[in-house]
Image (cartoon, rainbow, N blue to C red; front, side, top):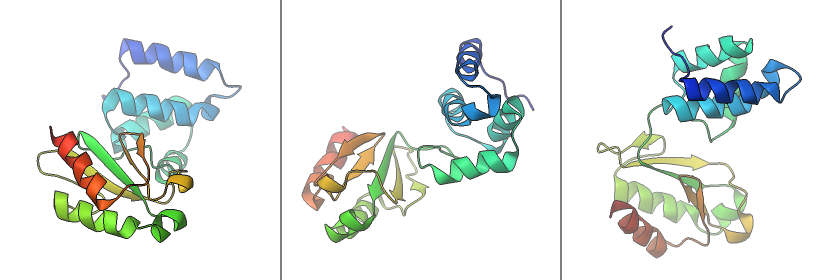
Length: 158
């Protein structure tokens, strides 16, 4: 395995791990660090984190599959995550999902050929009061309509 943290990331790794009574307790922030360092958490990167923290690969994969903030494949420049939980569902997320698929010509879990956009649906982004809601690269957009979504795509393309 040739995967290794850069000097800067190694310094951050040491600092992160020092904050916890046990190395394995640092799994979430170390995964975040690894994702920042390597763009996404490939099998090789996950094995590296597993070895560095002395945790099983299954535990690493379990954490990654639970949290939507971890990426297991290269993503587009703009990662769109549409919430589809009950509040957003009742307030029109299905229309937003259809409009996104039509506009980008991709389905959830896919990335446009030009790698400008990736699109996912997520269970909850904790924005029920502003449903329907979505995130683009972690930035929240609430009370989204099909019209405002199209305006957002126009802005992101510019």
